[in-house]
Length: 177
Length: 311
Image 1 (cartoon, helix red, strand yellow):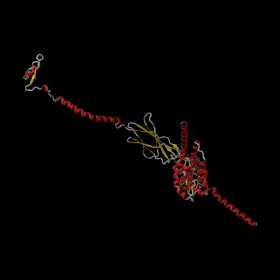
Image 2 (image 1 turned 135 degrees about the vertical axis):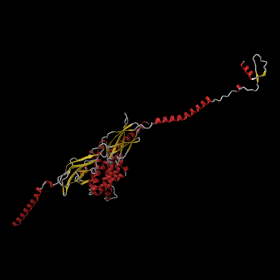
Image 3 (image 1 turned 135 degrees about the horizontal axis):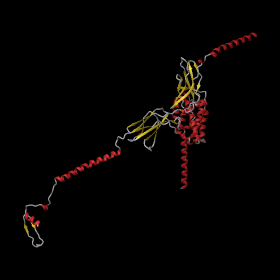
Image 4 (image 1 turned 120 degrees about the vertical axis):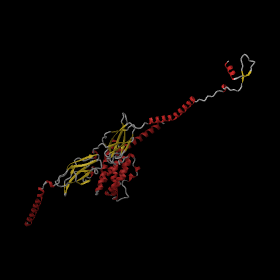
């Protein structure tokens, strides 16, 4: 009877700690104005997606099957995907249209701010990258490398709504409007 | 051969002289013809409205136009050659530009301005220190406190979608608890509390900008009081109970009084049968103790009867 009680208590404590930890990580991006980023993207979504020459291929496909990404991996995957967009996608895309350039700049700079916020959060809490999270990131990078760089960049830009929806869901970020 | 060399030399010398003469006007040119770049760039930012200002370029008799361009931290790190024209200030007249719609992320932005006069353009003048919108000055919000009957209602200034408000209110009495309410947007009346008559309530508010994670200072506290006009509930209850009592007691009292009066002025008296005296003859049995054996029955008149009773 005592052993049973002790094991239940231990399980309860572990679960509580996990939820507290995850809740804390989830609140990392709480001050980001996600609504503004989503709005900026909506304005250019049609133009960007119209330029996509490979509609049957997806780069961020793994994000749509959300059960693959466990709560413990959310911090690492967010960090990696923000870096993916900032270091590769935005750089590889040359936008000639000034109106679209303005919106892409807004999103890129917002992502930079999110990276900084996430880094501050990481300093307080561990943001370890487990094998599963690293695998997901690698798959996305591999998908990107399989296409010609300009097409890959435009396709990844077009899939921003998937990424933004995933962030909002996993970081409990509330829109401010 | 020698002639050919000499001809070449002459051509070179003429070209050189021509070039030199062409340069003279440039060297003697007055500085006014080269448009100076705008100076003293600064950003005044209040409540998330950012205004880039500079000293105007004065050219007598002419209107000088200005162009503004910006680049975010992303561009300065990854694509430093990219400068984006400002949304509202490509050829603007005044020596200022509202860059609120350009500064859309909480990162440092570089800003630059140049002057244009006809076909002449000045050099770019860059803001010395990059501007980050988290340095904006946040002022306490304007608020209007009203009483709608017993309802405490607040209406805050509409400062745009980036602003939320924190409203604190409490009863003005020692040890009262302070309540806090989050109001998502200004410009619409919001109900805070239903007030109790005779009590005073105080309210203060501050803004919160989620995009930069900062609060403004609290506004000045405003207090309102509600007059105790209406009868408190307890008193009303007492009045009701009293009224019901009166409704029951008064008829009872009236009825009782009526009965009393009836008894006092017009009583109905009934003589018992034994005291009734009639003229009809009666048989009377008179017995004395000594004469136990002889009991004589005699018919007596009422007076004799009375005499017999008395003796």
